[in-house]
Length: 609
Ligand code: M6R
Image (tube, rainbow, N blue to C red; front, side, top):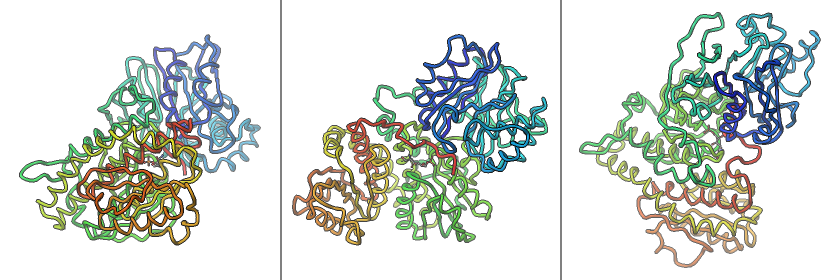
């Protein structure tokens, strides 16, 4: 959601802020703004729309070495220049990511002090509150403000009587910091720091960062010095660039074989047998040995990875696994048993509902394990155990490589679990691991079919409605195919367990409606084919995905288009099938002339409820 950048150093601050905001564009936003200390005091420039529009509005004479910048994703108040950040009240100018839940109540109180907001935002109320508390002592004002503010926040604050200093504090929402030769930088995520340094730290909650040219001083609210934990990333700027691809999404689809290899490699122990090994992740076998029930909590695509993980785990481990939408889970008064393991899944590690689900489980004393991509993120830090996917930065809003890396993580966990609990012996685990390690290759083969997918996408471009159907693993995969397509093409799309169609949805299948049918699972193949015949009998345009080794089972041409997936164990078919679904969504969005990487209304990381 909102993007935050603060720069204090030896370069032109406005240029650095604009660059930083461009790097944060992928988070999703509708307006942008910056504020800089200049000789004439603090100057603010804001614009509705893209960062490029803001750049064009900047006065050339806005000389400064220190400032803050923001991309806003509207929550309170419409998209407008006045609602865009930074917000200023008296001596306080600030930007904010999060939601101040008690802003209405605070506003009423602050009105009594003669302060009234110009905008409709919760953020301006926070600026008003801070201004009312500020008498020249920053820590004192922040100490009081923290007591009064409910909700989630990451703030970067400039006080007009403290030139060339930025103060930051956060609760819930992320904020990372680094110091480099060019100056000190803070941002809502690491992607905007990469230009300066590969080393960074996450500002601990309720600690204050005082950002100056040379250093970032971290203290608690009493002023005691804190030494933050320095983290480093192994990828460089090129990992977060398009590298010749037209869109980040296409690049990230292509990066999947490599991403999966990075998820698997550190966890493969090769001896006589190939076994998964989590010793470097600090995940003890006792975690598996004492688990009799698993709950997976996540949102969106990460939740779809969990749906697939459930089928896999139940099939192999024979223990009950439930998958919960994180935003529902937190309010459902869930039932935990002592031997439950809660697995939370999140690319960003910052999704507010997933984080809340994790905290709920922890509060109840339940063991938690997270599957996370972003290092040092809140979910990773707060879980008892973390399995990093190491997929590298994912910039497109539509998640692709993060999803397949999450799947790979579920397979790894399942095989280790099965080994520890004796469900599978060394040889069986090793055989599965051999196949898992070849999934990257399968994906490469599917990428070779991209021209065919592109051609086919032309036929989907005019569709108004579209359906994905499948059974078992293919149903879980259909859900992922469907969200991918709808989020970037704006075509209404639904995923159905194929057997459910007759119970209502079949009424929507009429002449020419595209149905993407996944039939990769041998045990339900004939049932699935019957469902395909049912939709075809009603005139649907059927796109069928089947494995090469099942082709001969097809007695008749029941499809308009067919994609053949490599032969092999059905359990691993999702890795090849998903590539086709991702490419279909991608090319259809391109043909519809849409913003593939930044679809309307969506944010990369949903850091508010
Ligand atoms: O960062 P997370 O994995 O927690 O994000 C969860 C969802 O917001 C995310 O997967 C979303 O559904 C994607 N845009 C789908 O492509």
